[in-house]
Image (cartoon, rainbow over all chains, first blue to last red; front, side, top):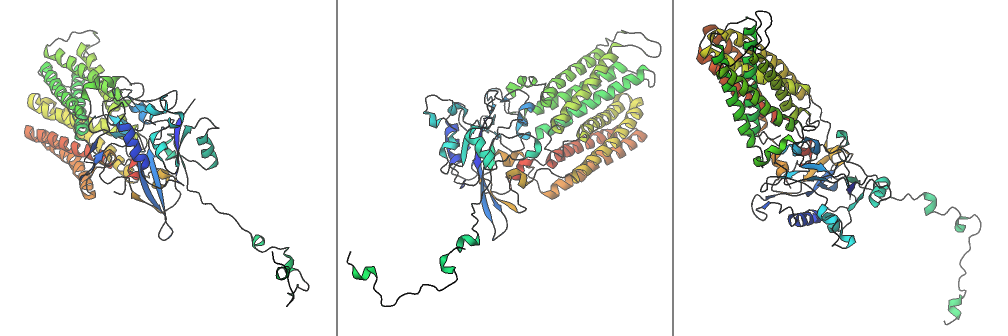
Length: 243
Length: 326
């Protein structure tokens, strides 16, 4: 079974919000209608977003590090938002594991948003239906697009390739290899939701240089005995030849 | 969580309606075995069911204000296999239907004896309808409470105490209303109802206090560390990704000051439990209708505060992601 998901590399995310804006641009222009965006350049801006980038300061001054943390629906393998929906508007697709909302069935009761521990769902104030990341389902299967563009808008927008997209159930896929080899983890594992999206931690690149690598133990200059001394006033080859 | 008034009114109004029906049926089952005598039973049950219906309909109307698309509400019966909300949506009209039938049977005084057993027990049809209504009333209480109790990461709600509280608080307000109602048209039932209202209110006090104590000492499983998956004891949010707020900052915060939340707790403890018990006891002794009506009004307003506090106290783990505007 396929489970499409994102892998977000916190090691390279620079917090530029390009994924946020490209997500909003693609999804507000989609067949499901616009995502509301009230007073975008005014006081009290307010709107629906599927994706946010947050920043967390780790540690205490001066030993701090700022981690930029993109957050969208994690497309859980055990999504707690789906069984609570009274109308069946929230569902998880069998074929690719994407958790979606049928906007024509949603009654806007907000119960699914209560049942998501990650706060991944937002009620659209204009359409009065629950909205969430669709993993750009209207894009990733679009055969009109060149194959390399059949990816979520946020993945294409990321300038540092901090967002990877693929099938986490295929153990040889790019995302699975990254999760396996770079220490990918899930958010709030304590609730058993099994998020499909994984995060890769900050990694420090360090090389260990041993002392004997700096000072050669077998350096002939360090050998005991008479060290070759420089012969004063002796001509060298350079002195006698003109190249 | 942000306490929505639609849901506060829904849960308190239907709770009182269910409690009132249970109270009516209690009197009828007592009368069936001649524990009490009611002068004009049909009138008493019919008008009582009418009041219960009004409360249930008012609750249903207020629930509509919680929905973004009420015109699609008929769809909510679809997922009863998995969703407690869907089960509630089925149980509520079913219960209302039975209350309506029960009330109409008494109003039209159509109550044939279907199963004659030994005296004094009489097998009136309305008794069987009442049993069905009682079962459905409890089913509805369980469905309503389980909507909240089934969400495991809202740890303040995820407890059997939530279900017990919904049952006891609804029943207590229903019996208090029945005490006031009986004082108006069947004064001989005041002692029966007043005694039960006091007992149930005091029992509800024990279970609600138990949940308050439980919630005071609750240890939240989620932390900022598990939320972003970074293992460090000093993590501070610097930006939530927007300045203007969103659904995430509105829906999950009660938005009130700590002192307000704390005072709500003492207000509801006083108004739901202490004052009604005092008023019911004095009203029972003096037979003063006004005091008994006042007892119900006080308790109902107290229940609004109780429900507000119930929502405000629940701490949603998503709030960990929304600590700092920026």
